Amino acid sequence: MAATAQAQPNIALVKYWGKRDTRLNLPVTGSLSITLDALWTRTRIEFDASLRHDELRLNGKEDPATLARASACLDLLRRRAGTTQRARIDTRNNFPTAAGLASSASGFAALVVAADAALGLTLDRRTLSMLARQGSGSAARSLFGGFVSMAAGQRDDGADAVAQPLLGAAAWPLAVVVAVTSDRRKHVGSGAGMERSRRTSPFYPAWVDSAAADLAAAQRAVQARDFAALAELSEHNCLKMHAVMQSSRPPLLYWNGATVDCMQRIRALREDAGEQVFFTVDAGAQVKAVCTPDAAPRVAAALAELPGVAQVLSSRLGEGARRLDDSEAP
Ligand code: 2P0
Image 1 (spheres, helix red, strand yellow):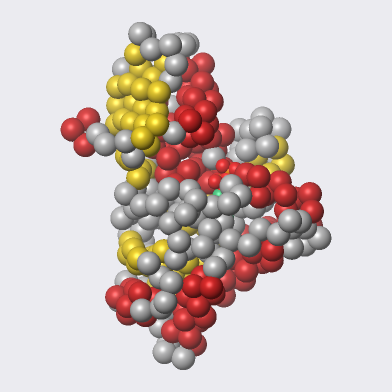
Image 2 (cartoon, protein in one colour):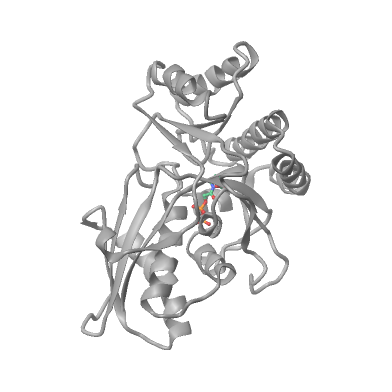
């Protein structure tokens, strides 16, 4: 009744920002992401009949807020397995948690894969994606590697709000350089932020109305390996999401000065130096530069020298969530 799994975060190029159902975490719009390989969450889970409550340690420390969300997600798998046994969860991230680096995506993807194995359920990927989504919307995408597309779905039960692979990591090898400008936890979490935007941003309806066209254009750009088209579309979609965030009341301003400097630098690298690179920014202050692998060292060096950039992480695209041997437990 124990298993270990690993999942990597994913970075959305067409963003998810808004829910049509907050209980089941059903997105209003579809999204498109790339799964990383160098950043990871590793999770070991052990079901134990002697436990009265679930226990969770994140990077070696108890974390009540994460425990509550993990328990709720585990209940979905326990119900399918016909057990009420509690579990001991050990989970570790090799990158900053809850700072806009999609730790909830890798976290819930690793959790469902580990729990599925520990409970002997052997659920299919689509079902695991649906269960991970109920933990965190973006986690549905980390079940798959490379380029991934996530459907908004239409059903009230969310059975069709799942991710699916679009193009494998090896089919279009890109790199991602992450400029870490803050390792503080975000002041407003994504779930609360999305609801605030839905209720108060005058731009929210336009965001929702334009999402399907952005998603279709991004899917075409990925299928055609058209870097310039994907760059233009991704930066547009990212800045449009931040316009929705910033026009919410009270405003959601996830950027700091270094975030803006990184975005400007990346644009200059592309427009003046001819590098194949574009930026995207999520609900945090970090900037992700998506580029060709040959450009990655130059992009990393250019971002590392900016004041306020504390750390630069480089990654290629990676595989979806998977079970690990127990000897690799965190
Ligand atoms: C994304 N984000 O598509 C967008 C862009 C943040 C900005 O998915 O409430 O942590 O758990 O479903 O998955 C972050 O949202 O939110 C996110 P919940 P989640 O990557």
